[in-house]
Length: 261
Image: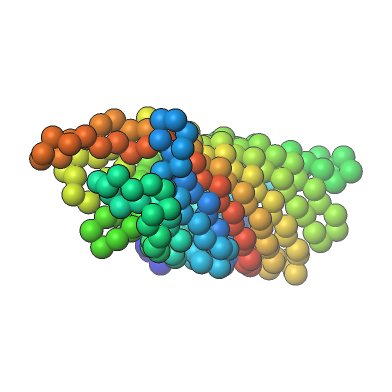
């Protein structure tokens, strides 16, 4: 998928080479702190990982209309393992009675329009943007229990930018509102319709100019994800199941290079 997108964007770039654009490729590590809760707020199960347990790459393309606005296209893909703590399904055992490892895949795609205020007030400028996105998260709790969370989203971003000589740093806050969030699970013919899925993301990227064609970039990202309880789905024995409320506190570390044209 990344190869196909890269080729398409390269063709577009050659056609509009007289305008400024950027490609950014980064190595990404992610830590996860995820928990599901019952109606009383008690933890049902949780998943945790270190920053090196879930890894992958991020690709960004930016096309600048002028010094004050741009179109940004971003893809991030990650995979790795988390430590699962919970209980066996359809049992009366309590939280912590089952400990295992689960496999995760995360993909996030976004397209946004951003404004960049080129204010020279002490090197500080303002950033704003609006966009659309798609998020996919697969949890393989076992070979027979696989859950896929997926939704589209509207995204709003605001922040500040500080620049001093060859170094610039942003402070960006983004809100993502999920559209038609669902969770599909192995063993069920119907999707669980989630009540809501929202993400609040804080990003602090730092860039260093190497020359007119290359920059180095590193970033820290904190992400709060909240999913609200789904509708009830019944199996062939008329047993009812719901996807419970959940919260996730994810952190990302990114290191990459920017190609400027």
